[in-house]
Length: 111
Image 1 (tube, rainbow, N blue to C red):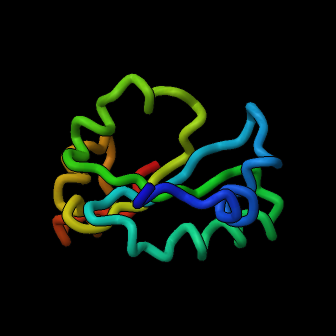
Image 2 (spheres, helix red, strand yellow):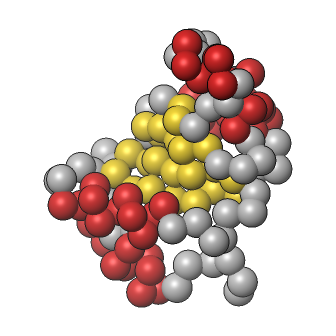
């Protein structure tokens, strides 16, 4: 179906066969998100560095509702990159904001 990863992507890009209960999830939050090259950039880098993590694209309508979900209180999630249209709203979701991000009025990385 459109938007779903292929079996080859699950195996090679997202390294599903190597994932364990300890694998951390990272991702890029945006809408639209299908065009993002971030998983193709970050997953090989994570693998080369020996980091047990997977970087996925996350199609999100409302970042505040998305991050408020009990799902993200779990330790499985290590952080997110933020892209359009959520960069400004991302700041409202943060307990701490870097002074430069506050001055700019937008956030790009959530930990």
